[in-house]
Length: 338
Image (cartoon, rainbow, N blue to C red; front, side, top):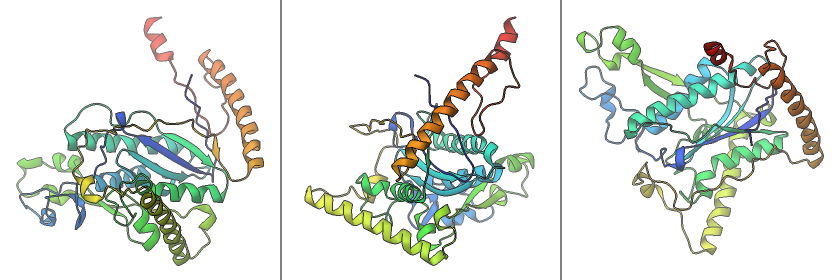
């Protein structure tokens, strides 16, 4: 069965998720708790000019830079970015003008992370097991539910007791307390073009760039004052944490804890890997609206199939439903043989 076609509409929030290949623990924490952007063991003095140590970005910094840089190259509205030990969850939306930016944003985002992860863990090949899955949220309630679900995911998985202590990448501290999301990268291209190590008057530290990741409020809370949004996030997260902790107490279990996350082998994987269930067509709290969306989806799917057949038969100018993408084109390969 073919993969579900992607269709996007302006001003709708989409929840995206992607898992690492074979669900390996490639996002295990490796940062210094006092300096989260640096790998554990790399001192903050590494930012000083001509220091013998070069700043070594942590997993947290890699994800932050990837999101900030991808957003800079292909602007979209990001509402949350959350990491678990083997998957990422992102909430985003676009304006009508930003619709073409969705594909390049995710291409740049995942490519940067994959390259850096492979370098960090000394591995080759794919970092992600499959393409990302996106599901539209049709109302404000479902948007809020998906955002809280993503933020509290490490707690629900029993990895940590609270989001506050989570060693994984999270936008919670920004959403709940207004902490700035700022990350660094070294412009190695600029460094090498300027002469690399052959030029003694400069050093990699001269090419450190700082990037800010901007998080947009979810549409239903865009008109709220910032303090109200932060209070709401803290209350919702606290309620989930208390519920999970109560369940663990009843079962006589406890969360693994931060120390064990640091000791995890990034190449290991779950003993009982999670099996992805059927992807919901949408997230919505209103059954009638959900059914209406299903009918609309069937119409779009039917039109997309017809357009795909025409397109692959040589009608290169064939129009596709707005917000959908053309299928892969094999024409260049045909031209090579005929």
